[in-house]
Picture 1 (cartoon, rainbow, N blue to C red):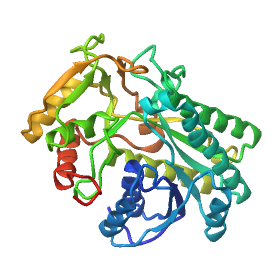
Picture 2 (picture 1 turned 30 degrees about the horizontal axis):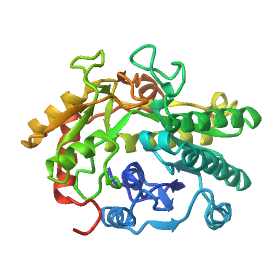
Picture 3 (picture 1 turned 90 degrees about the vertical axis):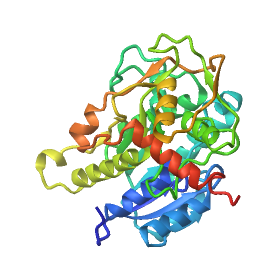
Amino acid sequence: MSVNFMRNKILVTGGAGYIGSHTCIALHEAGYDMVVYDNLSNSSREAINRVSTLIGQNIEFVEGDIRDIEALRQVFSSHQFFGVIHFAGLKAVGESVAKPLLYYNNNVIGTIDLLEVMAEYDVKNLVFSSSATVYGDPENLPIDENSPRSCTNPYGQSKLTVEHILEDLVTSDSSWNLIPLRYFNPVGAHSSGQIGEDPNDIPNNLMPYISQVAVGKLEKLSIFGNDYPTIDGTGVRDFIHVTDLAQGHVSALNYLERRTSSTNPSDMKKSVGFLPINLGTGKGTSVLELVNAFTEVTGRDIPYQFTDRRAGDIASCYASADKAKVLLGWQAKLSVNDMCKDTWYWQSMNPSGYKVS
């Protein structure tokens, strides 16, 4: 529900990206003001233009890299931020295996640079874009926040390394309030069809690959492995609608606001500290089940072929989202069919993504 007041100002790093752009809409609807900081390496300025149109208000945008400390200082010195939502990072598992140094440089060193500038300006509230990949190949399902952490690829390792850094930071200075949100598998698009996932080149994620096959941009879907110990031999994941995911970030900020402004003595005794929270639906869907759902919802047949398993992939991964419900009052509301419908609406309206055809 839209509101007509502005609450605290938030810096959104990577805010022109897929999840970041959707979160900007959710922030505006919740009454937050924001500044978007993005180097546009795997995102589009057009996404922010469209978000501005959707919310009826220009969003302040700064093109910059999180590893550019002077540029960050200039942004922080120009605004009084309540906190930061940190999306800026590279996210392709396969690319991380081929280019691990690139991922550690951008995702780890970039986050350290951001944290140092935040400390300089005494901004100590952070919602961090983490990942379910920090759980590696899970021992038990569903996965809760106390599950053992390990990684099967450099992308996941970069996220886990940042989590360890955040834990050490809280140990050294208890005034920090740090919420890493461990996403499962974001899919879908805004219901307007104006913003969605627009990968560079061949998609790394399943849903945009399916939708690009459906629109005729790609010939067929490659399914990596059909011999996993799952319902149909294909990998099982916890797909979550990006709109639900965006609301999870607002819920995390609301929680930080309540805790940091509380006059309740029991709340004031300690900061939030390091508080990891899963964002998922709690349900697993196989690759073939998602393909079939897409066909059922859109009427578009998706030709596919089975190929070898990808290095670093696991059989099944889905969340326990109880902690988010209890602490944040958040839970996923949208179905797999909603995810397919909104993805297809975005892709059919924008067959070339944000690029002009």
